[in-house]
Length: 352
Image (tube, rainbow, N blue to C red):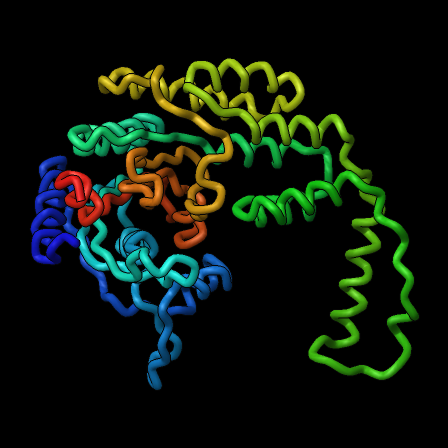
C-alpha cells in the first residue's frame, strides 16, 4: 500500500500542474449539508455517502466529491468563466467491495464557461491524457448528450420523456420504462376516488390528481417497435471513435433528433486532434458512463489500467452543464472537468 504522505505529495504535484494552466485553487469543508446533495442527486446518493446528524445544522455528509460545492461557489460569486483545481479527501461507502477505499485523495480540474464547449472538453481531456501518458492507460469516451437528444426527440408525452430522462442513469429501470412506453396502457380499475374513508399520508385531492394524471397518460399513443429498436441500436454503438461516428450517422435516419449531438461529437474529435490527441484511436461507447457518471450530460471520459481490471478508473470526468443549471438556474454556467486518483497512479507507477 502506498504511503499516504506520498499520495499527498503526488496530489500536490498534480494540482500544481493545473495551477500552471491558470486554475485557481478551490477548498471546501469536509462536512457538507446533506439536504442540498439529496435534493440534487436524490436518495441514491445516501447509499454511497457517510452521513451524520448535527443538532444545529441537521443531516450532514462527509464530502462525496468537490463538484457540487464548487458549482455553488462559482454561481454565488456571480462569475462567468473560471478555472479551478483542488486536492483533498473524498468519502464513499463500499458495501459491495471491501477492498476498495472508502476514503481517498482526489485531484480535480474544472473549467466553467469558455467560448466553445467542445474546445473546453478537448482541453480537459488532453490535459489528463498528457499527465497519464507515462502509465499507459486506456482512455474511454462517450457522450450522454446523444441519448438525451434521442429521448427529447421521441413522439411521446413530456411526462414520459421526463421519466426516461430521470432513469437514464439506471439502465435496467430505463429499459423497463422504455418497454412500458411501447405498450398500450390498460384502463385502470378503481373505485370512485371521491368516496370512502381517507387514510394514509396523501390527501383526497392528491389521490384524485394522480388518478387524473394516469388517465391522461393512458391516452398517450405507445412508442412503435421500430423506435424502441432504434434506441437499443443507439445504446449498442461502440468502437473506435471514427467507426462509432459513422454508425451514428447511419442511425440518425431513424432518430433525426440526434443529428445536432452527432455534429458536436464530430467537432469535439477535431478539437482533440488539434491538441495532438489521436482521436482515431479513442474508444467510444454511447452507453459509457451511464452507471457511474450520473451528473454528466454530455462528453464523458475515463482512463483505465487494463493490466489491473479490478481497479476503478484512474481518472474520469465530463461535461455537467445540467448540474450547473440545476444549482444556479439562469446563472448556471457551462462546465466540464475531471478528477485524478493519485493513490492509484502511484500504485501503477510502482508496479504494486
